[in-house]
Length: 291
Ligand SMILES: C[S@@+](CC[C@H](N)C(=O)[O-])C[C@H]1O[C@@H](n2cnc3c(N)ncnc32)[C@H](O)[C@@H]1O
Image 1 (cartoon, rainbow, N blue to C red):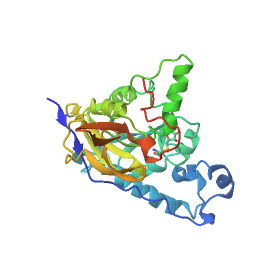
Image 2: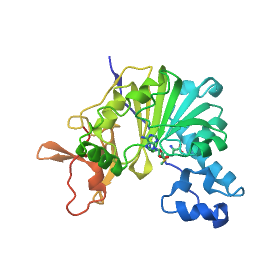
Image 3: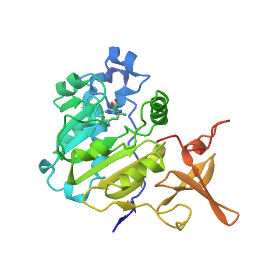
């Protein structure tokens, strides 16, 4: 028996506040303004600015925590989470302040800064995690790490170099989580049917549409894998369809596969939504290569 897919209400990620310049360290501003790292880097802030930035990270973390299955809310001290792509720990610390034990992994060489902020963790790739034993964590948080447009370009570059493209994005993440655990997160707007199908295979899945066309998700690993309905047959009244815009016009978005579905000559057409949202001349309306 499979779990039915669940769709939650639209969520709105808090807007990064317009802080005055003296909240930022001048030397960090020069480096980080373009990369926007200050959105999630405590080292960019002055002692006066940091508490304000922390209030913002607390808000984002409250939204993320609301994605967890209810059982995790009662006694946070019982649970240990892994923050996947933690950078210098802005959000990891906010989770700790909510009462959870947290461990972070981050691809970049910033672990000294993570530790200086009072957080535990290691430099690692979320695809690897080979030095972490299985079933260590009650939940994982994968917040804004996967599915920017460039995400697929990297996979394609890898394939062109003759290296195998990835067949599983979540295999090692799943390995370090307990069987009664959960994986939550936010995918960027270029998420594909294949990524969601992979998540659905791990357990009972809930999806939430989010502003900026992002997708929030929770997979409850204690539940059977989730059945994803067929966008070509699903009732247009189903919660899997949400209002969206394509090329500036109203459209029906099939949330689980990120496809705009339209009626056409008695049948339906489905087109991958991201290229339609910001139409540009010559852009192919195809799914990014993933295998
Ligand atoms: C936009 S930030 C998201 C903020 C973050 N989730 C937090 O807790 O503050 C994404 C982070 O994920 C990291 N990242 C991206 N791909 C990764 C990978 N394959 N393994 C580990 N970290 C990764 C990036 O270096 C970056 O620090």
